[in-house]
Image (cartoon, rainbow, N blue to C red; front, side):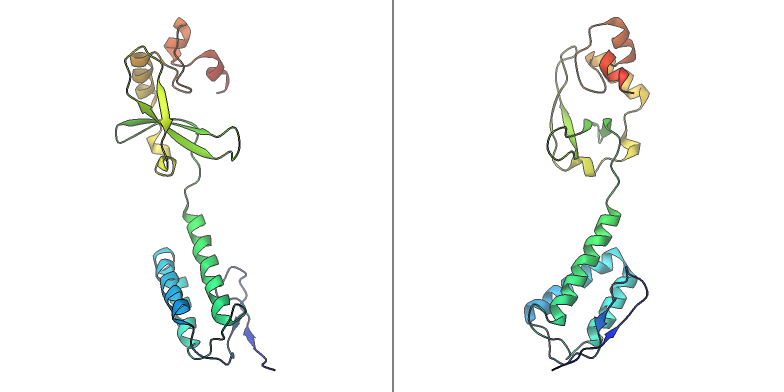
Length: 192
């Protein structure tokens, strides 16, 4: 029976918590070694200190990797995957407010799905004739590119609303004079 000892770190978020330090074994499989290198490259782009610690640990474990799904090489890969995922999630931009945005001269309407996932997504304004209802089509992936500074300014909203006679929130065609002045229908104005 082989007894593996573990080095305990104090931080529960530390990449190296409870890693085996006295494990007999050999080298990881070629696929495992390639995956470790790939994950450490990704980690380097996300957090250089964590990548350095991971590389030191990987080097220290040379010749001591144990095989199989329950082996320490596989567990180390799981740990690297979790750390990369955690760091990517931390970098993911926080959702922006629903509303109208301008990115590279294109107007987008951002909203949350009302059925199903509840996730936020963007729709691109299709060119149409002034005075016609604005039409939007789903723009895959664009919501992740939009930032608060892309939010349509009041001046842009007034210009767009006046040009299209369309609600700057939902894209509905406006007919009432007071709605046209505020560039928003009564229902959308009530949601502010």
